[in-house]
Length: 358
Image 1 (cartoon, rainbow, N blue to C red):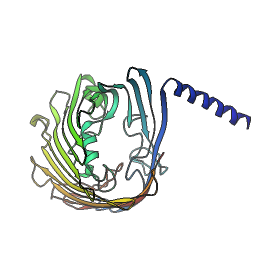
Image 2: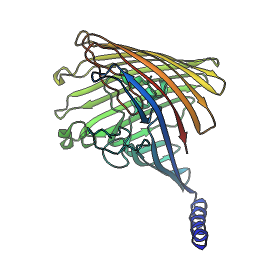
Image 3: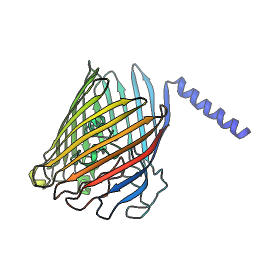
Image 4: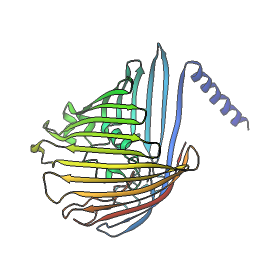
């Protein structure tokens, strides 16, 4: 009892000090568990308890310190974990795709920065601006079995290490942002890049005011010779009618020809329809390979989320992919890439589960 009281007193002292100097540190996290069934895989069908169907299970720390004059220091460090108990290495029967989220501990995010009237500058491992655009426009939030990532993200990385980013303040609804990626920040994709100064860059312009939102995003990622293996231009927009929010997305990834990467074009039409304490989600996504014939795919998806509270929700979703004769795209979710079918074979996925945020 005495030890508990001492611990509480010490914690209270630290909390008081943090409040006194205008700083704060928050422990946060998310646990997502769902039963998922995937069919159409080359090795057959599978039913499993997945960790991270709607969102990858994670735990992290984030905080701010008031430096005075409107200037604040900020930081965030976040790692993924396997809520279903799987801990095995890749290739084992107990492998969990919802691990740290990238190379090493705190592989999801790890950055520090400054924010003020000038905007926000951060450096570390961060989400790409292109990913944030995709996750925002996708009715499924880049998760569930209906995720746009199944066929619609055309090879653009979700996170990059060794990144320096800037986001402007909101200017009557308009914002601009940019990110520079050092070569070593992409070495887990291509080890040869660790010797290159420039790995790539990302630019974004956006507008959000009332029911209207729109973004234009560009991303370039280089190979070890400085040629673009990703040269992606995306445009997206949404309008909230109240009874339904309609979203549209188009992406064209046109790498340099010398990299032997195909030009990929993708589009998505989606809707979010509020129903009681939840929402119906629906989307149709198409992918075209402009370099190689019969390598495209189409996906339709429908789902429903139901809020039990501000922090806990139930979900269910279904998605189906029709592949062209040479394509092998598979239905997955927020952390599982799905089980690739044979060329030209269709793929489907269904999931039901719960997500709790703390």
